[in-house]
Every structure is written in C-alpha cells, then in structure tokens.
Length: 119
Image 1: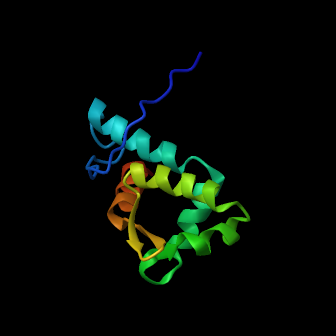
Image 2 (image 1 turned 90 degrees about the horizontal axis):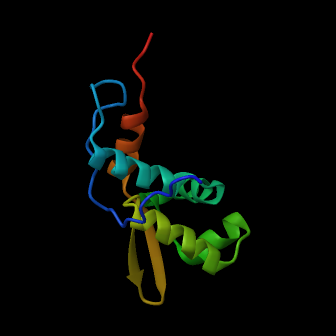
C-alpha cells in the first residue's frame, strides 16, 4: 500500500536548490516541496491557478471562480483551501466575498526546485 504524505498546513517559504544541483535534499525541504506539489496535482487546481495568474493582481473572488471550472462553489472552495494550506494562495475576506491571491514566491520556488540545468 502506498505511503500517504503527511497532511500539513505549510505556508512557510521553501528555499531549496534545484533538484540535482546539490548532493541531497533535506527531509524538511522534501516534505515542503511534496506538500506544494500534492496541492497542485489536480487538474481543477491547475486550472484555478492558471486563471488566477491571468487576473489583474493575480487574484479573484470565489464567486468568479466556480463558473470558470463549471464546478460548484463548495468544490472550488475546497480546492482553494488546499492550495492556501500549502502556501500557494492567500485569502482575504472583503465584505461577503472571499478573494484568493497567488503567492508568486511560492510558485517560483516550486518552479525553481524543479528546474533542471542539464545539457
């Protein structure tokens, strides 16, 4: 049976060298990276992230996100909360609405960790 990843709420920035650039990846950095990759490993979440990255200020209200995916608001909220718990998004309540914003540094850190410098 596969081992499940720990259920962590981790918003601390990850700061690790690209994979393969050092002799080893520490356990803490491996867990931090895995938590973020797990949060992104869903087609709906990737669509949400893509939509948010394309918006002014890289943010949108939850009421605007459900129609984009043709999913219910509770389902979209579930996906957004998972990405927030992984430190990829922040949220802010404005009156009755909740706005989610991309944390560019978190996305960049994941991309940098996966960037392979070869050939």
